Image 1 (spheres, rainbow, N blue to C red):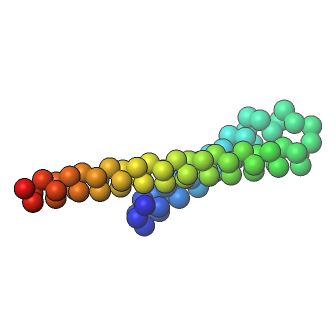
Image 2: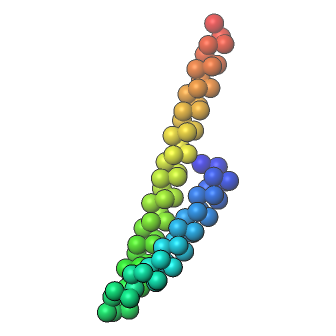
Amino acid sequence: MNFSQAWDAGFRSVLIFAGMVFAWLGLVEPLFASRDLSVLLMLLAAVAAAAIFFALAWRRCSHERRRADADIAALLSGDGS
């Protein structure tokens, strides 16, 4: 993963975190009697969603990189014949 891909995935992760926080505060928090428990669960869910998104983006980039390296190696081995 290069810098621009990491920056993009990191920014999207922050947007996912913020979106989950706002959705939680508007839709889910009124269902909890304890505000402290609600905030704790909200933070855990938002951090988990952002981290999972970033990990999947990292994995996708590494698969694309390996595929591109294999294509380059195949092209280079075909040129030597």
